[in-house]
Amino acid sequence: MAENLTQSYPDNGTLKQSALPIIDQFGRSFTYVRIALNEQCNLRCIYCMPEEGIDFRTEDKLLTTEEICRFIKIISKMGVSKIRFTGGEPLLRKDLPKLIQFAKGTPGLESVHLTTNGLLLSKQIQELERAGLSGINISLDTLDYEKFKKITRRDGLDLVLDGLEKAMQSTIKSIKLNVVAMRDFNNDEIMDFVALTKDNDITVRFIELMPFDSHQIWKTGKFYGADHIVSDLEKQLGELKNVAGSPTEHHVFKIDDYKGKVAVIPAYSRSLCGECSRVRITADGKLLNCLYSQSETNLRGMIRSGASDEEIQDKIRKVMWNKLKDGWEAQHYGKEHRESMTQIGG
Image 1: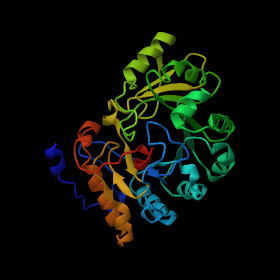
Image 2: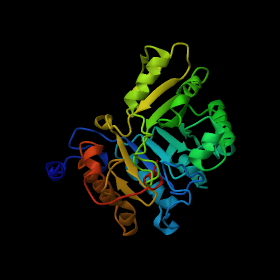
Image 3: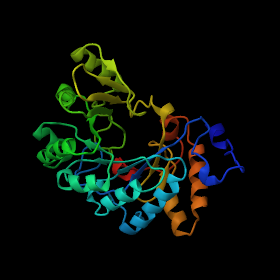
């Protein structure tokens, strides 16, 4: 592990820094940036944070609209082609349409996406369409009203389902449903979620439970591994037809005569690390080179201390160059610790 961190970053003086792609010492290139717009959320999911919430950072410690736009300009010159806005719950940010529109108009960026819990989606879908949003991932772990209230500690399943329906009817091209799969909680709903892909051109994605639950339910026997999910799907559906998906969609299937797709994401097993193309920026402007990273770099501090675009680009490249081989190594190196997924950026 120490050897990984002492690898020297390649200094190529023959090209302008802004023309260099973001790469690491293992040959991975990074073309996808996730930017968290806030930490606040209007749900309190049991695998994310306590019912009373967490100690949210004050507004002065979060990125401003202008700072986010500057980041977008900076990374668009570094080979990044895709941005995803996350949270917290990004639909709580009033400047979201403005940020989407800015990103869509930035040269080099080909697509702008959003991850949301869907509660506010039906009210904002037309504005998101007009802003030019490329895709929406909606987080929804159950189709049962009582289970929804149990897992989110809130009401609102009707609102989420309405948002999903409006999203599917919109001109936004990519609609995905993210389902955190949990044993003895929603594993009996797998086929209900799969059924949503029969008449709808969406991707339903079953995601492993991750250890960012603020000590709520992690290691309580609810972990439902990707291999078991795939095995259970095969038992129900027979042989599954493999199709192409995004790099994180480690297993992607299409059922005959179904319009949509089904994917399984080994988020905890971490068998997808070799395909990683992501850079993460938290709501308070910290750069994480891995979801499981215990080390972070304060880009917000660089901006506020007057750093140039070139200095920020160089810092991003060096941090990503030193990305560890996988999430297992990253989890055990460093001392920073964020107790909740809402502090990392979903």
